[in-house]
Image (cartoon, rainbow, N blue to C red):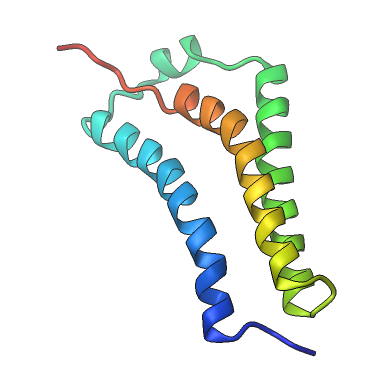
Length: 114
C-alpha cells in the first residue's frame, strides 16, 4: 500500500507550503484592506465579473488542485516514485503559479482610498 514516511511528507510540504503561502497572503491582504465591509449591493453589482473570466479562473484553480492531489495520491500508493512526484510538483507549481498568481492578484485587489 505504501504511504509517506515523515521525511517524505516533509519533502512534499517543502514544495507546497511556500507557494500556498503566497496565495493565502493575497487573500489575507484583501480581507485586511476591506475590513470595514465596503461590499454593499451597488458596489457588488458594479464589479460583476464576466462569465469568461469566471470560467477560466475556475478551470485554472480546479485543474491545479486536481493535478496536485492526483500526483500526491499516486506517490502515496507507490504508483510513481517520490522523486518523480517532487519533480512533478515543482513543474505543476511553476506552470500554474504564474497564471494562478496573476488571477489571484487581480481577484483580490485592495481598495486604496487613502
